[in-house]
Image (cartoon, rainbow, N blue to C red; front, side, top):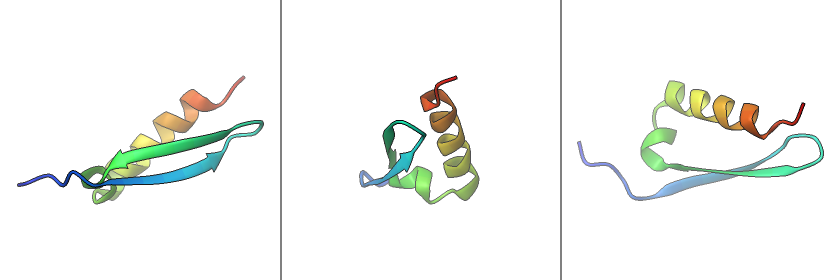
Length: 48
């Protein structure tokens, strides 16, 4: 399977900051992997 070199980006408001998310297209094509990646990234960006 050839993996695409394209990327997908988005922004998320995590309270007092805006976080820019960028993932390879092959991550975005796998819904479960994308959801896990977003959850991990946002949990790291949120301040306690």
